[in-house]
Image (cartoon, rainbow, N blue to C red; front, side):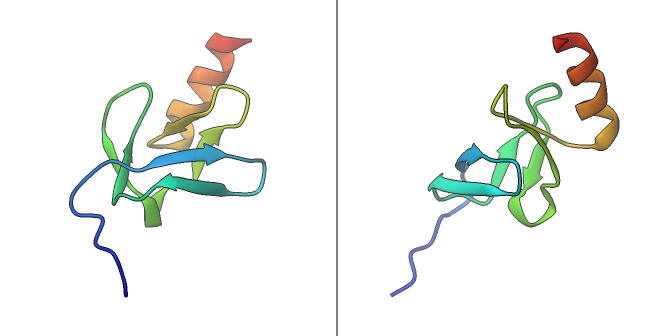
Amino acid sequence: MLMSSGNSAAQLIYGPNGFRVMRPGEFVLCAVTAQQVPLEELRYWSVDLQEPYASAEIATKRALEAS
């Protein structure tokens, strides 16, 4: 039986080659902009900071700030 995740935020663990779903949901919130990013569109995150990002530009800016 499939469980519906509703319209809620997922909780993920980010790895170097992908992510693992800890709590099902349809999206994550960008750590910088709080924009909802659907899981099927999630391409950018930080393994070290365990944060998702809405775009490559946002991820790069955050990485430069964190270094």
